[in-house]
Image (cartoon, rainbow, N blue to C red):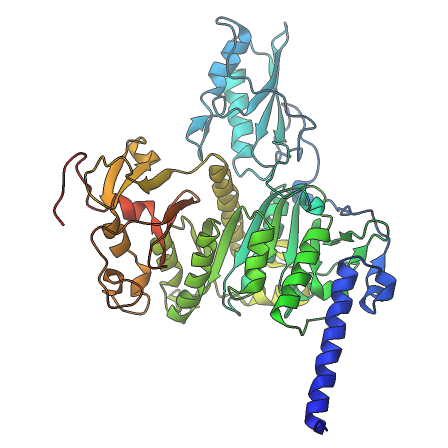
Length: 549
């Protein structure tokens, strides 16, 4: 017969299995009343739509030319009309377009006419000008400047009496699978990840989300950490429980200060105790059955690690970009680097690094860095991440998280809120750049132009798109991750650590990741993330000439 300890273990295992099945059954909408957890998930609700409140910073429709307050953008145009890029010579419409060509988008480096932002242009006989600027997102950080400059240049025309600018954003389009109905209205998905616990990832997720909301975007947050959900502590929704529509089985997010929130902690179970495959199934159910409505940004607060849950999220969702969170220590770099590599393999570009607990300013006027420095900057340098934000050690930042009201809401004009504001603006800008296409490409020189085995053909927008050629072995040997543990010559060898990298080595495949790097798979199984700047600095092959190794 089984021992008492064995019977206790089996009983515990069965109880955990029952709890897991209950949770997954509810979220799969089998029948909420059949599950113990179902009693805590209120049935009914708003039919899968988030009940939104108005946040002061984003409230109100914009007015006409007499208005000089913050510009508010309609989230999405009802129908996207054609862009206007030309008009008959000598016409007043042509005068307006020529005036608007003086307004330059800083991200694309093009004027707003060539960017296709100008629509619905109308000029009255009396000289009243009306047109629409359809931007890439309602949270466009330069929308105020676009509004001001457009009015300035148009009203400078001799015949122009007034100028009315209507701000809209492009209609929602995404690569969501047809089966994921609840996410059809989600425009961009931003993963906030660290691969290491305790570095302030959830703090970053929440404050970034509410900053985007105050910039005018529609935002949701998904807490993907079922083992230690943070959102129930860091936010204070009036309805602190998820709702499920009994007809459709769709989960309706709870809401706090205009942001939709979904967390396992709002399912009434607290934190989960279950095995990895069950967690992956639970996350999949929560992601695919939640009705988010129309969102500009869905922030995914990723759990630590690079295991099943993280892979499930990246495979189920077309993630637009990732924000990586770290701390200054070398140990944090080693762990976070794994996450950057995971995203690169899955072709998810990392657009920013947030380094928490970077420093504090003492009463003596000096700046102190108790945890060292360099982790965040190194990630940016080694993996081509374009933006680094160093967050100070501020007691109010953690205190606000513990009291359920994020710091950017408590002190929106404070120094920390200003840093989050810049970070959110950069995320918006980088996402817009991603929509414009990659800044470079890398491929095997299959035509043999360089005359060297293993040569690679590179094209960079910074160099006018003109191709140049480098040796594959040079790219492989330039891998910077090999020095993470101090082994400076590790990049000169294959994965076995003994065989030198051959001079004719060629990649198995290569994919551009975002605008700043390329992910390369090598024959020995090594996966490399090489930045365009790194490749640009390599020795180049003269086209059509053999080069001795």
